[in-house]
Every structure is written in C-alpha cells, then in structure tokens.
Length: 593
Image (cartoon, rainbow, N blue to C red; front, side, top):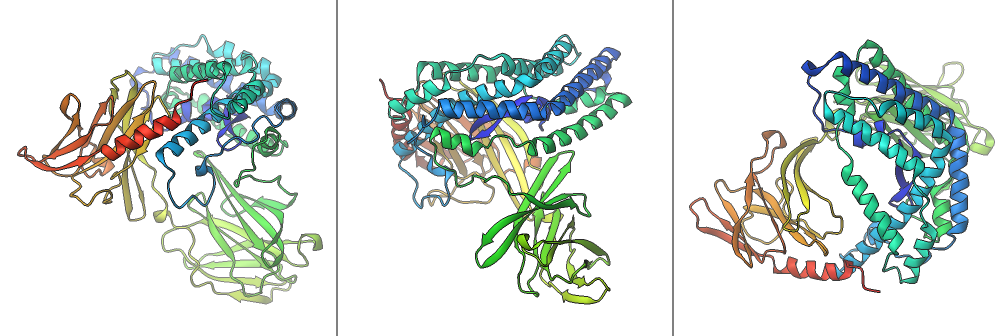
C-alpha cells in the first residue's frame, strides 16, 4: 500500500509500499488458519487476491519514475507553500544525542510531549497530502486492485477483514481531500506552538478513528494453508518483485526529507543523511550480500575515506551496515570488520597498488577470496580496497589475510589474532510475545498488557508492554527486567510500573511481576483497598512471577504487599508519582485560547 513512513524526525511522508509488506498485515503474531477449513472457494479467493496483489505491485514497479516525479513535484510545492511555517518549533530533547544528564521536570516533559504530538499531527497532515499525490500515477492499478479484491470472501472472517482494511487504506490514500496543512502549521506557530487549529483536531480525530478500525493479523500465515502450488510460485515472484521495487526506488532520486524539513523551518536532525555521493563500485560478496562503495571525503587524519555499505536481503526483510574506511592507511593496519543483520560477518581494508588478490584464511579450514577494487586517483588511488562477507558461526575466527600481486607473490600477510566474525549465538534471539491481559479503564478506554521475552547470549530479559488507545501518558518504569533491583531499598516482592493518562480520559494502570510465592498486592484508593488482578504468565516468557495489575481513575496513594498468610510484607507510597503525574498533565494539556 501507500504506507506512511518517517519524515522530519518522527512524522510521515509518502512511500509506495504494499500493505502486504507492512506489519499491519504481514507482521508477526497471528495464528495460522486451520488447514481443515480449507475449501475450493477459499483457494480460489486466495489465488485471485495474490494475482491482484502481484499485478498491483508490477504496476507500481513500472510507475516508479512517475511516482518519484509526482512525489518530488508535490514536495517542492508544499515546501514553497509552507515555507518557514514551523520555524522556531520546539524539539524534543529525546531526539538529540547525547541526552541531557538530568531528566527534565514532569511539567517540562508534559509540555515537550504535547508539542511533539501536535507537530506529529501537522506533519501527518502534510504526509497525507504527499501520499495522495504520489499515489496518482498508479491510480488505475489501485482502483483495479480494489475492485478485484473487495468482493472476495473467505471462511475465515479475519482474512476478509484484513484485505478489506488493505483496500480501504489504498482508497483512502488515493482519494482523500487535501488538508490545509500549511495554514494549520501557521495557526500552531501563532499560538506560540501550544494549540492546534480546529482543522488539525478534526484531522487527528478522523485518523485515530480510522486506526481503531484496522484489523491486526498475519495475513501471510493465514493465507499459506490456502495456497496451491501455483499460488506459492506467485508469492515467490511477488517477493522478488518487492526487492526489485525497493532497489528502483532507492535509485529513483526521491525528494529528500531534509530538504522539506529545511523549507518548513525545522532544524537539521543530527541523524540526517546527506545526499549520497556517486558510487565507486558495487557487487556481491560470498554470502550473496550486495556491497556499495562511495567516496566519503575526509575523516580525521585520513586524506581519502570511502564508505562501504553491505545490504543483505532475506524472506524476513533486509538489513544493512555501513562503515568508513581510510584508503591509505599503514600497510599493517588491521581490516575493518563488523556485522550486518547480526549474523553476517563483514571485512574490508585498503591495499597497496600492487595487490591484485586477497585470501582470507579461517580456522575451519576454508580459504575465502576477496575481490580487490582498484581506485582512481580522485577516489584515493593508486591503490585499492578489498571487501567480503560471510556467515559467522560459533568459534569461527580469521587466522590470516594474505595479499598477493599479479604474479602471485605475497605483498603482505596479516594475522589478526583477535578478529572474530559475528557469532550466531551472540545475536539477540527472536523476541517471544504473549498477550496476558485485556481491560478497560474507569473511563472506558481499552488497554492490553503483553509479556515480552528475549535473550542475548547468556543474558535474558523479560518485560511488560502496555498498549492503550492514548499516547499522552506519563510512564514511571520501576522493576520490570528480570533480575534487576531498582527503586527503594526494600524487598522488591512486587516490581511495579505505572502508566498514567491525562485529561480528557485520565487513568492510572499499575502493573508488574510478583516474585514472592503466594503473596498478593492491594492498592489504596479513595474508595479503600482494591486487590490487584493476578494473571499467570506462560513459562516460555521466563517471567520472575505472575502479572499483577489494576486500572484506576487516579494514581493510588499506596501499594500494600501482603504475605501468603495475609500479613503486610511492606507498603510503598505513590505520592511522588501522583505529584509528578499532576505536574506532567498541567504541562501536557493544551491551554485555552
């Protein structure tokens, strides 16, 4: 679909990406359809959908240049119309590094969060306008896709709902009216960057309502049991086409986000990426990863620096890594090495002008050749560089790097004793997620609590994640991670955290893991003591204890942790958290006109 991605440090611009490739429909988490429920009607509908999706993707590949031109034209037009509209807008301190040494006051944090979210709404308006403009070259293909898939039905209602959401989002992007984004930005600036215009508030209300109607599920998993052999081949062709489109868009000279930021009057981001310099060379490594060499100017005491980017594609997506290499270093300098995508070991180095081949000896008995790229004088030559990547494994080490001239003579032999390629066992394992609880606040706002476990080598960590419909809350993290012991110097039988929300729907959610067997927790409220709800956590999450949680209209004044026999183990005051929340909300709530 035409998905909204980042522009201007955290807001959105148009990017032509099918919904099927987004987390909304193809992400992790949903169960696979029951194979017993497969019918000929399901298979036929699945094949029709996959064919329509492939045809839409094929059309967007053909329209890449036209899409880039439309996006560039719209970006330039909005840059002129909105010139300087956001000059002086506040920036969140969390967007810059290094972070401040002290945390801002709750009131200052509330004001910062309000400004950040208001700016997000305004740039979301602009992003919708850009998305609509860039979708127009593929209008006929989108309309054909929507017309084809809208009548389709499946015995699994979730599949139909997910595809209806996809079609609806495409139609919304294609036909949504232009928002008065520039006028709304100027209204915000004239209010001292404190209040949104009525149009902006209406836009945000509509956007929030639309997001609530979107279904979540893994469409890829749901459709897989319904695919015949021809459909599976079509899925493979679609994946290949997605990779091709990604590469075409990269090469299509899309308008830079930084240029539009500058036109709006926003300060340059410390994470901004300048326009890429021309390529010096590109190719593929032993692992199948693509590499690109670009001139990178001067760095430190190096006269000629080049950037080396490795990009690896797989069924689960793509990953990349970039490093900078000094071309004319000391002959005995050790190579640069790193990891791309976690398990891919990368290695590169500058070589003398006479070097024509490089061999990398590994301790498993293999000798790997690395291509030598000769550099012109303007790129740092005479001389060259070599690049290579391969899959890292447990206990795999580089024993030697041998550089040879055209006649096969050894120019240089390096023995990098401490160079160990990326190891699979040190990479973070795939996180394990499990829904634990669903509930509603006293004001009727829904929320979910999910458990998350991941491992990194020997380190294991468990956390809770609370998802609500609101995004203005003030978080008080306490003891969540397995094995940690933060907070007051008391026996932390209950490692709690607190999620608050401001007006117009204030609430406080207390949640955490209880480590003392048989214990319980009560929260002191104006109505008296209220027992927190206990939920068992699946063993696969390796939690330190069960989840205990409660949702309240305001922050409880105290938590009472009880032993199994009902006696008080300890109490913990939440007065500080209540005071912080009050001050935060005073800063967050939009002031009256």
